[in-house]
Length: 605
Image (tube, rainbow, N blue to C red; front, side, top):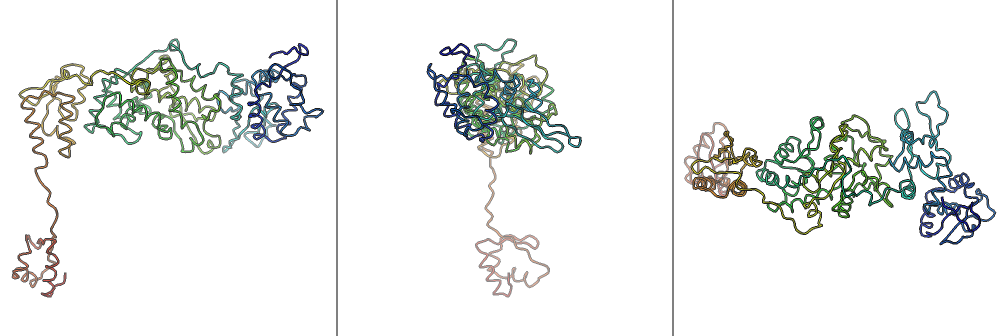
């Protein structure tokens, strides 16, 4: 609270410096509330505005500009009410003064709504603001009485009721145009810059998978080239994802009990986005694949990605995203990473800012939709309510997105290794920072130098037999042989026609597998290997399927006259190409002539 001493040291100032903000809020109050609502609220707070001095640019302003001379509040017009309320809310000091006069539960209730979006009575209790909702006397015949808003709360928030089978849920929420105003006063520490730091929070462990992913990239692309993995949309089975992910050597961050219970692993978070690119492109370097995969992750709407990234949340319906800024989550995260590429970004801080930022549209599910949905967390078995959805859905969605970017080598993550109370797969992720690969993927750098994809030293070919030797006990690329060879022990793999042609359908498939072998296993082929590959190509398509130019005809029953005609007519014998039992062949282009001859001899076909 600040004092103005032009008249006396006890006079309180209301600042009217920002005329544009006063005009904007005047419009909002006027359109959001009816006249009686505004008057009732003004009557409550009017005693605190009796002896104030209005100041604009350091100079007093006539009170009559905002307080109609000689009028009681009940005589104010609607536009006069809205203008005075606009003045009070247009400056942080004005609002600090007003909140300082009202009961503490008012500011606590507003804080609850800022923190959770929608505040139930249970949430208000946590903030010691239960007086914001006043219950009528309970009726013995009803499970839940119908509450109303307490004095002073009318203008600060709106109330919404959700009727259930045997009770009614009441939620308070702040209108959009007031959220940022109250945030500046009650949450001054939440700013865009506040989500970034030079180092992770104390006690967090840093994990980076950039090198591991680059090393694993040929394994994934190799398996994809051999049709060992495929993906439709964002769906991929946990078994396939686990099989591929096992070959990457990337540190798993999803707890084992959740992996078993929910049949989810980190591979399911990043493999689909990569496969979207692999399905469209047959060649390219790792960094460009990652660049396109990152674009897919951040541009794909959550409507598709929510089930993929939040497999433990059940009960979503399409309407969950209606009117929600969640549609722009990916782009917003991309912009934040671009803003501070060398700093650590707090995911909790990101959400804090998003839900209190000016003009944000990142509201949770509209309250009306909760009447039609029972959204629950399958790990805890608990229902998700309007005032828990930000933490249980939005934050976890962002964390899952971070997990996918971590596995792709785009960001390094800071995780809380001491958090053992898991309620979601990626819950332990707290902060993220771009890697060098991530800076290239996001478009902040024009060049990225990566290590070679596969060193040819990992394998050796037997010059006399079709056997491949793995030259290392922990060879990460042995899985590349899974679709073309048979393991015979001691790091040896036998290749024959059957194993190599598995899943091949055309000569093009065979050539692709040979090219894959040269790229990933060995390009230095002994003669026995060259002959093997040449014979495979030569032996492709040895038979040609003739075009079906013939019609098969069958003699129905015992018909000596017909048999006599077919065997005695020189014209018909020339048309009949093959006879077997009661069936014979006629060329299609001779069929019309055959029918005419038969008609001439009294047979109608």
